[in-house]
Amino acid sequence: EAGVAQSPRYKIIEKRQSVAFWCNPISGHATLYWYQQILGQGPKLLIQFQNNGVVDDSQLPKDRFSAERLKGVDSTLKIQPAKLEDSAVYLCASSRGGEGSNIQYFGAGTRLSVL
Amino acid sequence: QKEVEQNSGPLSVPEGAIASLNCTYSDRGSQSFFWYRQYSGKSPELIMFIYSNGDKEDGRFTAQLNKASQYVSLLIRDSQPSDSATYLCVVGDNFNKFYFGSGTKLNVKP
Image 1: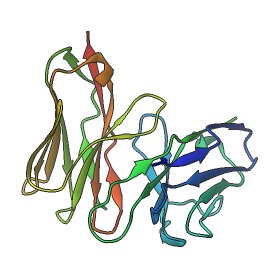
Image 2: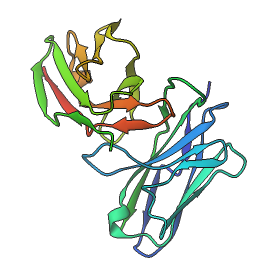
Image 3: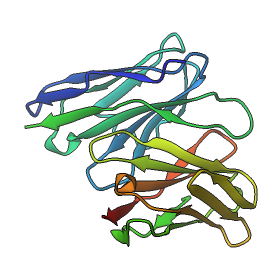
Image 4: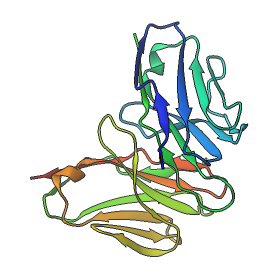
């Protein structure tokens, strides 16, 4: 089966510009996650969707970050305006969802550099 | 706040030795436990998962879980230079939420 698809792989922007990332999860996976990973650290959850509903966005900087998953399949994450500290890898992951234990699979990530 | 603790390393082992990576977690209600390998500049790749107390073996990898002590470990036998990477300990709850350690960097020296 196809894995989690993300695009673009790399993005370089200047501060105060906007940027958007796209993610298509594994087919049939109801739960989708966006993580931010700063160099040398573990991934930090930004937002978790269950189908097209938000389960957890407590660590999403809502003044500049937004995310949507309108049809419960693919998702976009937007940053507007970007700051220097947003330079990181943005990882999308998906899991089957539902009750019980699930395995989370990651996409290749988008490396963002804010200059 | 549910926490997952790992020694950041680096852990250096000679080629052919056993590498032992350790992780503790704070939430006694945790249900699932994962080890991901992450090469520099790459995304995390699932190595092992374990749900029950005891050992689970897959090739050169063994995951060990002790829920009473809230401790999970990963043993890598016959370590190879290609095993050099950062290993992330991830703990899942029953609501499809996952909590990450900061990772242990492993260096396997030829």
